[in-house]
Amino acid sequence: MSFNPRDIAFLSKTMSTKIDSPLQGAEAAIVHYGIQDIEVRATATGNNLLFLSETFYPKGWKAYINGKETEIYRLNYLFRGVIIPQGSHTLLMKFEPATFTLGKTISLITNLIILGGIILYLIRQFLLKRAKGAITA
Image 1 (cartoon, rainbow, N blue to C red):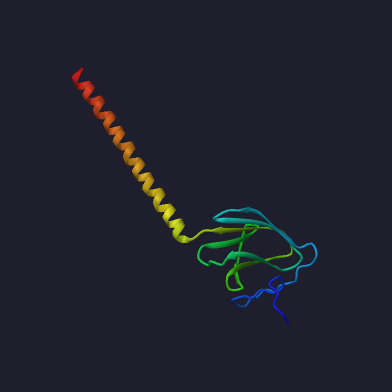
Image 2 (cartoon, rainbow, N blue to C red):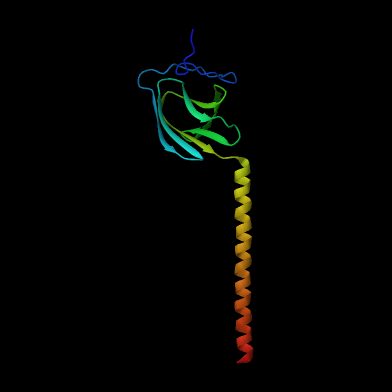
């Protein structure tokens, strides 16, 4: 028996879901490919395994099928895979690490504080000039 990567994928852990071989009509097409997100439209003829030649990176990547989070499997040690259930679906993979969300929140709060400080400073300067103008008049 010879190894054909088109027919066989090695998983790093045991999968509880039975995988069906794709039949005629099973297909997948990348709709959007970004740095932090990938959108795929897929039609499965059963519980089909979608193999993505994207580097497996467990921290931060999340997968959603029709908006519902699903597991990402490590395939052939280096790549990602997702089980697509029977029917037509939209798979969205997003890079959402907790550290990125925390950093984004801290940056937003810091920017609001700075902006608030600038606005208060400008209001104070305006009121001081107005008060000086009222005293000299």
